[in-house]
Image (cartoon, rainbow, N blue to C red; front, top):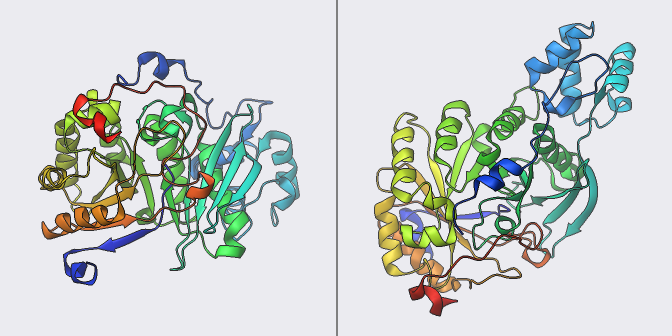
Length: 402
């Protein structure tokens, strides 16, 4: 889901503001990308699919010095070049450029369309080699921060009932190169207009930790100090709650983690987020509590899409406070963005503020996410195509809310 600018509130600032779980069939039938870079004779490699050690090894295997690998790396990711073809590899040895043109590809995506929302948000539609389409959102801010929201899959297997992408079904994982290049394109297309692209959020199409290998590798390329140079604190990977992958991510990545929570009882979360039937609230939150105790400076961002009559009651606010007790965290309240086929209604703004204030009074740090790009289906939960996965049975006591 596309990430949006945040308004921050803490206790000190309160005065200023009055389906069944994803099936094995879905998980096994997807097409997995081939290895990021194969150095077999006669084959072509995708340069943006390699981290720097792999790129250096490949350059050396072709008979060139390691220093040429660093120059190539900077042409791909630094120096305002963001090269997409060998002709843009300024400063490289002529023989190296010739070898690259014969044996490597620099570009994994093709821009199909760019749509501008009334608030200036841009939605980029990219075509993949197999003609699949993914969506990336670039969100400028008057405060000098511009965020690119990247996709990690074509579609999604999670079937979250409030999410347009979540109900598409999973078509394929994106490769490392296809993920990285979304950030490269954002800088290439919009740096002159918006200034520096400062933040990356893995909140576009797909469940990032379902594609954990490529997401961890892509995020490491994004934060490389000789490459795209994003701060690890400004790269956030969101998940619906895949517990084993959360553990791996927290051990292998230094980027930030966001968890899409959206409910305070298993009954509701089983309904609106079927992944909860496999990894319930107790297991998910217990894992976070344990893992973050081993990372003293780390926090988790809990995302909470507010659905009228479903998860926005006073009791929900009280339960949420209890659920996250002992977990270093921030809470991000998100207004539901409607889409075709949706059963849900957005919580009114005044009730969101009331909910927020209750959390703040309990000592939590809370943010409210403003909708951006919703008039062009570029807002949180609006990316993708009409869904193929089924709507799940609504618990009887919530039927009145829909």
